[in-house]
Image 1 (cartoon, one colour):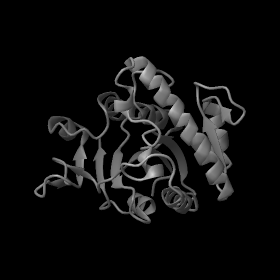
Image 2 (tube, rainbow, N blue to C red; image 1 turned 90 degrees about the horizontal axis):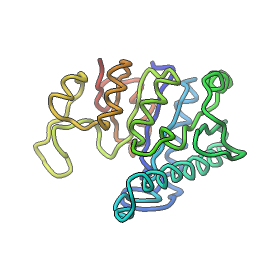
Image 3 (cartoon, rainbow, N blue to C red; image 1 turned 45 degrees about the horizontal axis):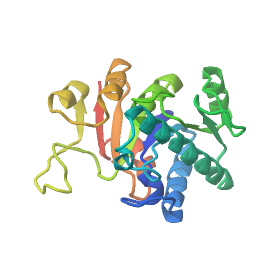
Image 4 (cartoon, rainbow, N blue to C red; image 1 turned 120 degrees about the vertical axis):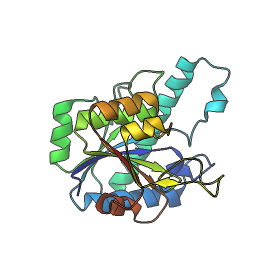
Length: 232
């Protein structure tokens, strides 16, 4: 059993696939999944995207830097929404970010990370890496190193890593377990290149799961056969 994980979520987890905004049903599913893991005394850091608020194609007329900064602020909006929701459901939550100075948000501080985990807080890392030109995948890898995570769980819409899109190709082959080198050799885009490099360098395994299944998060941490894992 893992004792400390980083959960990487897309904004679609809050809205549903292809939708925008916040779905009460999807948000309650997230609350349920995280609650079941915290009950087992597993410490969770969380990084969420902003796809439920903004889509990349909406920023095609903007520079990459400005588009990324808007997206970073979107992750702060989602984090504030989640903090309030989690706490109303009995989950002690703190947001850490380097890009905003708001009363509800703390700066990223290593001593504070340990202090909050010791008091059973869920930590949401908002605002990406604090720099544009990097994705939330890279932010997740960076924060995973900083918080001492034993595993990154990437929440997706498919139940693991495949050689091609299983929603488009019926003959897609699923990989139960593979190494970082094998993933690179096969050209599998599990995380973006920068994030993958960080995970490989610091030997942090990545598990890919279909987050929309009920009870999947806890089962994925207990059962090696759930999802796909990429490891050193």
